[in-house]
Image (cartoon, rainbow, N blue to C red; front, side):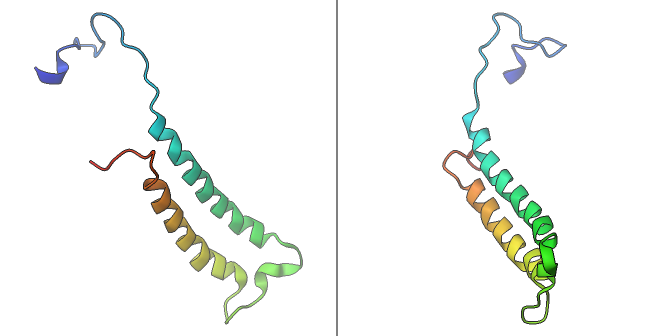
Length: 93
C-alpha cells in the first residue's frame, strides 16, 4: 500500500496523533507578496497625485503609462524572482 498504510477509508490517521509541524519556508514568500501588492497600490497612488502629476509626459507617454507599462512590471518580475530564490524558499522539485 505504500504511503497509505496509516490511513483508513475516511482519510484519518490511525494510532497516535502526530505533532503539528511549523513550515517556516512558506512564510518567507510573504515579503514578496507584500512588495507586489505595494506595486499595485503604487499605480493608484500615482494616479491620485494632485495637480495631474501622472499626466506629465516623458518621451511621449505619461508618467502613469511609464509606471504601469514598464516600471511596475519589470520591478514585479524582479521581486518575484528574488522572492522565489530566497534562502527560505522551498527547493524546486
